[in-house]
Amino acid sequence: MNPFRYERATDPHSAITTLTASPHGAYLGGGTNLVDLMKLGVATPDLLVDVARLPYDRIVVRPDGGVNIGAAVKNSDLAAHRTIRTHYPVLSQALLSGASGQLRNLASTGGNLLQRTRCLYFQDVTKPCNKREPGSGCSAREGYHRNLAILGASEACIATHPSDMAVALAALDATVHVQGTGGERVIPLVDFHRLPGDAPQRDTVLQHGDLITSVEIPACPFGARSAYRKVRDRASYAFALVSVAAALDVMDGSVRDIRLALGGVAHKPWRATRAEAALRGAPATAESFGRAADEELAHAQPLAQNAFKVTLARNVIVRTLLDLAEVR
Amino acid sequence: MDVEITFSVNGAARRLSVDTRTTLLDALRERLGITGPKKGCDHGQCGACTILIDGRRANSCLALAVAHQGAELTTIEGLADGEHLHPLQAAFITHDAFQCGYCTPGQICSAAGMLREVEQGWPSHVTADLTAPAIVLDDDEIRERMSGNLCRCAAYANIVPAIAEVVRR
Image: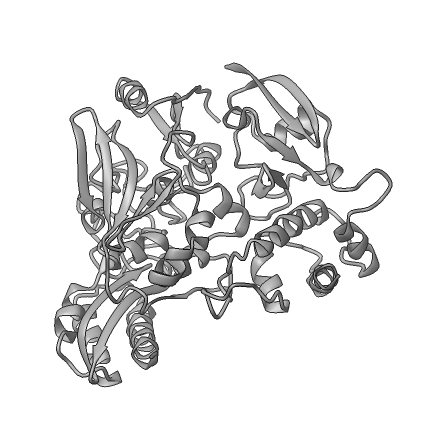
């Protein structure tokens, strides 16, 4: 591991000032991904600004039912929070389907959003990878890509975003609160992560020095009727091949409103807006769920090893929505 | 770059100067001679390094020592009460819940942390009703909650009953 300086931030302002002045520095949260990438030589910061003890460790339930989640809240605390379990089960389920008990105790909300792809070639410094080393080429396109993107990928990069939590947050219309040298910004979660295009080295729209302070979930009247379904190669402790986060409002057999996002299929949590539009007002049946899924996946561009994900995503969407339609 | 840190390990205050790159696992093993926590994968994937940090189970291989100033660390060495084994240690022996034993300190520390999580009513991926006030820790729950601890000897068939026995008591 490269040598680095360590500074424990005592207030947000000094953290932002310090990191902004250090172009090769990085914020440290729980460290579960960053420390691993430093061991692998993928991340080589010369300064770590530890933001884990900044006062962003609270979950605040708004009077209208919305929730503000501090960036330092641990994944395990968020998953276990009573309001989240009751009113936004999709988020608890997403968190609980990710990583292990030990990792969730370390990992933070802000850090979870900023974790990097688990594409094999990104994590292997001996191989070309446009995300790790822009311009070096993509090894995955011709190599192992069974786990990689089918939607929104580019010639330069077919990586997937690994977070489960972010997929649930995308479905819930969450926003990311960010503090930078220019003040505070609120970024919709669906715009927070980028598609790779020709700059796959940039996972998010953040500028260097920007600090995530919290994530806000707006009130969702049918949030209690939500679920996360994840398909992976093992029953536990593995990244998603395909996952679905959904909330469904059904009235008299038809879809009044819906939130739908997919994980494991793109460079960012994939909000399925085409499927949502197709389903509003449609009958809550397997047929219309399937048609809507087809509409969303019509734009998929799978490669040889991951073509199965198109069918898998369709089936997981239909199953998840049918389960939600049957409840009550 | 060396930094001075203090934390407590199994109840005893420890002070040491560490390179910023030192993980808690390496600080414990290489600097303090506390070799219960094992280095398996060193990437947070196998769970052999599991210890309790402020009462919560965590992978000590991914935790930088400098970031844990003031923490209370508990390793397998700190679970027993003198000569009196921790119930999980006794149950692992009774059920022959290991073969080579390398993963065992991590398994037991993880199980200890996991049982506290259950006491607090934390659900898991296999908990059917997220809103249930109490968790019924059946074998499926134990397996899911312990999935962060790998055993290359595949002693799982005895690890699950060992933990289940402690739950019953």
